[in-house]
Image 1: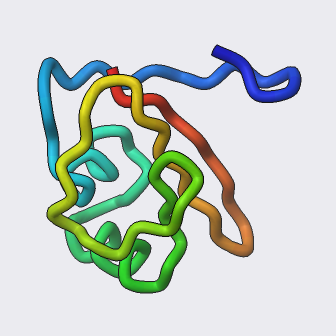
Image 2: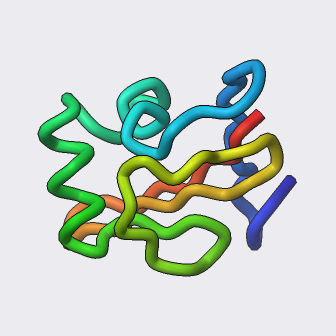
Length: 78
């Protein structure tokens, strides 16, 4: 899938996964503490909406975006 001219990477998880775990698994966060910080700061979107619950269950096909002052990355849950 593409947004504009950029292809969105797919991170295969084989079922459901919690948002905090997914951020670490997809290498969007360096640690659990970093994932928690990103989420509570409002820097994480799921399907275009800010998500503040670290335990949110993600399912295949959902888009997760991390947006900070220096970084922006979108990945699809596979």
